Image: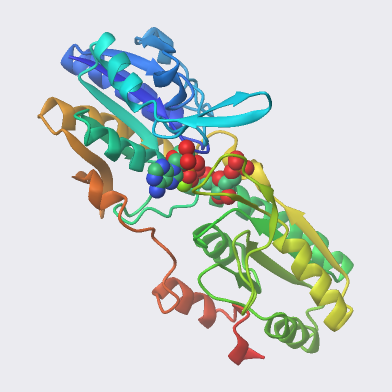
Length: 364
Ligand SMILES: Nc1ncnc2c1ncn2[C@@H]1O[C@H](COP(=O)(O)OP(=O)(O)OP(=O)(O)O)[C@@H](O)[C@H]1O
Ligand SMILES: O=P(O)(O)OC[C@H]1O[C@](O)(CO)[C@@H](O)[C@@H]1O
Ligand SMILES: [Mg+2]
């Protein structure tokens, strides 16, 4: 059996661990041949594929990023090419089928988030066998308990919060940490809880500055003249819209580049309370670096499970973690709905018991 593997969407730590596990399992356990597709679906349209053997994946387990490259723009169903500085779009999915045929690939393993997996589903409807592997630092895929990359991103954010704590305390400042999380506040919630934040702002719970300032004032009264606010980039002020920093050219599904919520909150806090405030935007630091042991293991389990699923004849599914077990779900189930933080869920309740404010209007 010959299979292809690609990585799509934003990169994250653990992609290489999946690629390694796919190749080692496919080659050693099943005698399969593996082809790596360069830069996500772009490589299938442009016919950029490389053979992947044991040698090619040696030493990549701890390496961040992806040896195959990735793209969070290229979809075969709406493929953009720049002509005279302007993107011109066309459906290149038949070209992709042709390339798959030419390389005699019997299946694709697509490692990505909701977008990459949705494209995988659409290709499967054209007859391609597709096994998805759920990746994203945002942890926003509902069919799995966890996506790989999330644990590393949270670890990076917690390290930053710990460091900001000491300087916040020394200078009696409010420190705002802006973390990623476009539609879901999982990184902010986990990092805020683990880092002992005072205020956590997430897309799922609209906030008011008044409530955040009340928390800061309460702390001041107790002699705690500093506070830590963790804000997800997609957090929304009550009655407002997310703060954006530009456009993602040619991306109709994610047309707006998020960013700037930290600065927005800073200006409002200074306006309302006069408290000295600083902002740190973690940005793509959260997507870089070596995966944590948890992510290395999860990614390895996902990679081996994806190959095993193909070997036992599965045609369109996604590997996922359910409790202690790695299993599979139909791919269509995996992309139905994003997983957001339940505002009444245990994690939010726990955070509230720790005195953490979510900036809810009733708090002010
Ligand atoms: N609902 C959708 N249907 C078809 N294509 C989509 C959809 N959503 C996104 N895409 C396309 O899928 C590609 C990858 O999407 P995206 O950049 O969101 O990455 P992803 O795989 O979802 O990972 P992540 O969002 O975690 O970075 C892009 O070309 C995007 O335009
Ligand atoms: O790399 P880009 O295009 O700036 O994408 C950033 C987006 O990707 C993500 O990291 C998801 O992969 C989001 O959290 C963030 O909004
Ligand atoms: Mg996406």
